[in-house]
Amino acid sequence: MMTKKLNSLLILRGDIWYYQRRVPKKFRHIEVRLLVRHSLNTDSLQIARRRRDALVEADDLYWSALSQEAVEKGGVSETTRLVQQQLYEAASLRAMGYGFTYKTTSQLINETSVDEILDRVEALSDKYDHAGNPPVQISDALLGGIESPKPNDHTVSTCFKLYVDEIEFDAQLKKSPAQRRSWENSKRVSTDYFIKVIGDINMTDITREHAIEFRNWWANRIKVGDENGKRPTPYTANRRIGNMRTLYREYFAFLGEEDRPNPFRNLSFKDDKTNKRPPFSIDWMRNTILTKNALAGLNAEAKGVVLIMIETGARPSEICNLKPENIHLNGKVPYIEIREKSDREVKATASNREIPLVGISLEAMKSNSDGFPRYFDKDTHLSNTLMKYFKENNLLETPAHKIYSIRHSFEDRMLEAGLDYALRCTLMGHKNNRPSYGDGGSLEYRRDQLLKIAHPVPREALV
View 1 (cartoon, one colour):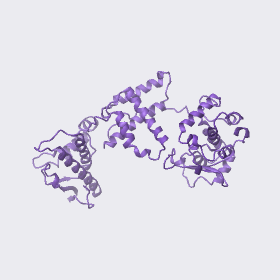
View 2 (view 1 turned 90 degrees about the vertical axis):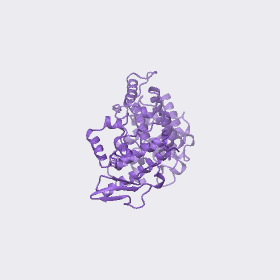
View 3 (view 1 turned 90 degrees about the horizontal axis):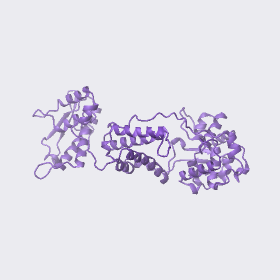
């Protein structure tokens, strides 16, 4: 039921607001009262309106649930999952209407202070009926009489499907097909590991002990390695535990249990982040990568991506997904435009940017003016191709270097040349934590700054 007037169903008695409502005719066969009236325990009209709205919805859900339970002889059938869910939601809303967060009896016993329990009992004191008993729906709401419905089919695996298909469907709307697969696979791996260690148990059965056992399993892998001796980093383990924490939180929030304690909370490993990818040195870039035949074995598009990275600092995924309309070669200042699209996300809002093309990156972009159809929406394939080639041809300065080291080299060159901090953030697609009063400067300004750090263009590297 929607309240038609701002203050309908509200009456003021003294300084305290009350909720008062006639029981709808369609529910009088299961509700003996003709009128319901309860104190909202507040003298604030704004708070009273919020609590009234919660109670209106709670009553509607409660009466609807009882109507579904009723049978011809006036008895009550076995509670269905839908009815149980409605009763639980009604209790949650009713508790909210009286100024409390709903907690089950077990939560009140194990997780609630004595003072709060006394406050709840006191709140019941003015809600007794003529027989001297509080209505069962109110005592259930304040003292946790309705248990959370336990979905028999919501094991970790089926809950993950619900998470992907319904709970987080909107997070995928702007992702490309490859981005959606990558997003889902990353999270699926985490649930697969949990099922391997703990089992495909019901989400409501996951305890703190299960979460700690899952963390201990990762701790052992970090210390001694997996069956192949490979040891994950704390960062990797934190991602897997974090994905389970998110799945648990979002699933129960979807059911209306936002305050349910998360068993995976505070279980992250300390990560000193000493494995940061190092940049390629200027000497390595010029005397190893930008030499004749160094990249000759790569196909033209993969080679083009590498060369465009050098003087733009753009991510490989940003370059390989450029469309012809994002490539501007004919103006006064040639540049590439990285923008979020309706069918493809960028990493962050700051990643939307325009980068002038200079030096070898400009020459490589001229050879790929229509983009990179071979690797469009195939970021992982591109990364695997480049890493395989760089390893086989000894193009990695150290074992710690990656393809991304080209991007970090670009960032270091800007820093060492004294380029403005805000400009560096703009060109890298990083969030600028300082106050910003402009758009990062004109294309001409950006180009002139980049020319200060550009490598000489070795023509043999373009062959």
